[in-house]
Image (tube, rainbow over all chains, first blue to last red; front, side, top):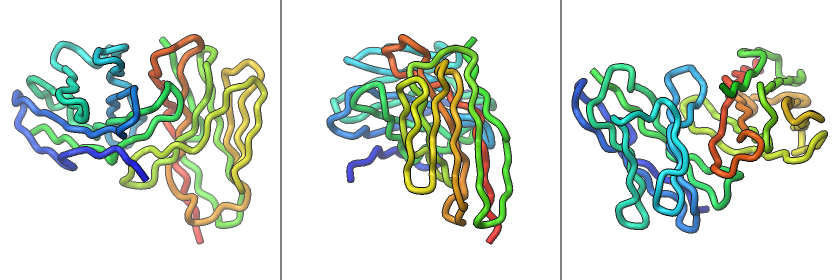
Length: 112
Length: 113
């Protein structure tokens, strides 16, 4: 069964460093999303991407964040200068339409 | 802003007991989706309800969507240890075409054997 994959599974970085989280959505999906989940809390929307551009972003997704779909298969989230409060599990998701979303296994980001 | 609330936050039951979690949105939703997240796992889609008053069943799970499309519930009959996890409701606001999901805080279910 097709699934969303994410790499790395765990990323440790120093505050102020840039990180890139990678995702490979399911191949025939058209909508792509990034969410994050701080330990023990709810899943929070960051950004959605459709037709090669951002369709919506939340207030969390400030100018330190960016997304790209560089080659038609990968979907990346970049955090330019990480802060301690960016530590969280980051989930990529994809969907055929705006309905059922398929989540990847997540990347645990730890900022020291 | 848009908020989705879920209660209870935690529920501990003996295997065989029933379980219900309730979800309430501050605004009308286009649909309601339910996800299950096992400990250490990622959210996995369970079901989507679209119509006002809709009820859907999946084996021991019964999902309801309220008449005003602002609340929903998930009921599990005769829980099993495999039901352990956190159950989230989520939905896009009415009229949204962009797919953003607003998640509730989730109900963490523990089942004692």
